[in-house]
Image: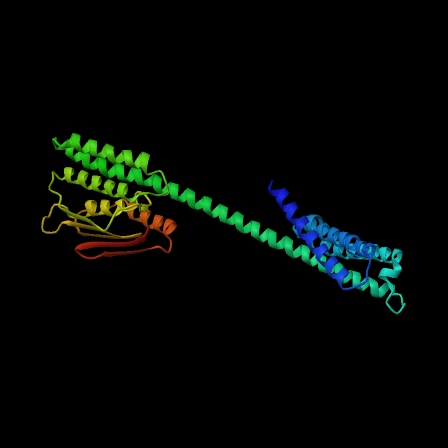
Length: 337
């Protein structure tokens, strides 16, 4: 189907060009309709044939394969051949083509040079079109390959989120079970709700912001259970939550980091979480007191992951500032949803 459309537009282009010049010539001279057919249909067919001989055969066979010498020899040969063909038509319609208004006949050399220049023009036109089309197709292929690469990378990054989150959460629940806490069943149920969201509702490229915020709240609740309701978190959302969309599982890494490396059981220095919404603009702020004895020996997969996802999915639409100071860790993210 695509090839049929290409043929259609090529036919429309050449018919339009030949018709236009035929009409202009007929209106500005006394050339008969028969003579117009000879000039524009006959010679037009030869020039168009030369165009496609170069476009469809010579360039793919020689130029694309870097056989430059053979290509140059082929061009010389077709220019001579088509020049002789045109001169043969000129001899047949001598009075129309070769004779001037004063009765003098154009010499073979003069006519051949004129015919050769016309042939060179059509050869140049077909070569330029071929290079232009090839460049466009190559750019599209490169874009498709890049999109496939980014899609694969995003899928890999997202695949890391669930094991990373599950590893941390199971560690928390293990601590509760080890302590024989009565809140262990509640923690398992909360984790089940969180995992249901991660597995079934976060598969789209973007999800409702309201669902993502509820997911964050569930995670915070799970951590409070882990700390025996002695985790102090100051979590506030300002602005109107409407139909905004956000890439799923984007903010959780920052909050995980606060609980994993921060001090959550100090009422005088709670984990501070702020989300401000202004239409399609989201501002996320997080600050926590650092736990000096809790270092991540595994390399911090979560934050590196989210930074890469921001680069891929919100390029030019976000700003991220992280301040890792002696006693506090602060993160600010501004995002255009």
